[in-house]
Amino acid sequence: MRRGLLVPVVLLVLSVLPLYAAAPPTVGLSISTLNNPFFVDLRDGAQAAATRLNVNLVVLDAQNDSAREASQIEDLIQKKVAVIAINPTDSDAIAPTIRKVQGAKIPVITVDRGANGVTVAAHIASDNVAGGKMAAQYVAKRLKGKGNVVMLEGIAGTSAARDRGKGFRDGLKAYPGIKLVAVQTADFDRAKGLSVMENILQAQKKIDAVFAQNDEMALGAIQAIAAAKREKEMFVVGFDAIADALAAIKAGTMAATIAQQPKVMGRLAVENAVKIIKKQRVSKFTPVPLKLVTKQTM
Image 1 (cartoon, helix red, strand yellow):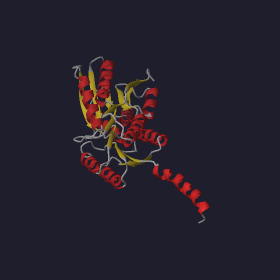
Image 2 (cartoon, one colour):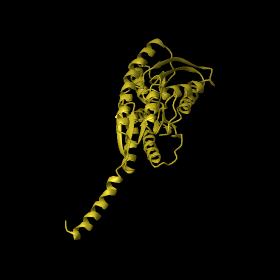
Image 3 (tube, helix red, strand yellow):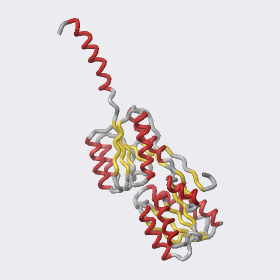
Image 4 (cartoon, one colour):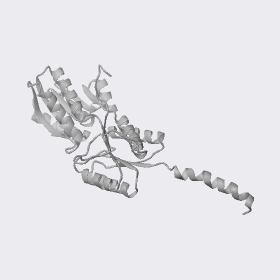
């Protein structure tokens, strides 16, 4: 190569090197299930933030299987991603996996659901206990302090199910005239909400209200109630404010829902991951506001 060409070639190489040095970081996002509109919104919020912040986001669907989630996260460890955000399928079962991630020096963020027995870099979620109390207060006010109430619970072992249930029970303590006549698990699933509610309707001759710990179960319960022609007897309250629930409230088949903001959760997860990558300080807990949605407040 002639000496006169050497300098331009060197300058060209040097100009290209920063492009390689500035390769976008990779953040893993493990979601309990994408067979639920709430978590689809959470993913979409995360993806929008990742695009805006120039982050490579790898989204994994655990399909509500703790073993599958653990295996998928181990793959993220092998890929040496910068940060892993986890929406646990089971708040207890995820703990050993989180310890493996931390052993690999990868920071962990939990989203919507917490992890029991481990400390993570950041936790982003609604205050589910407060949301459960909010639902209880609405039910109690509408029933004027007296009546029979049913609660459909989410997946056993998840912090969301535990905390929403605690909040609802605590909220009802101030109303001794309200009886919790049935509490059954329907795994945050619409089809299970339908079948479980069918069984409850057969066993309980008098029901005034139903609180489902998410909208999917609430919508299933509404189907069962309509099929039994008992919709005039009771009202249903959900949790999450997914599109189908809002449509049901507008139509008058659902009374209310507690609105979460899953897209905001996803956005905050990625934003906090970027802060961690940049060695910036993040809050241990970032609460996402809740509100009660009824036909009157829509």
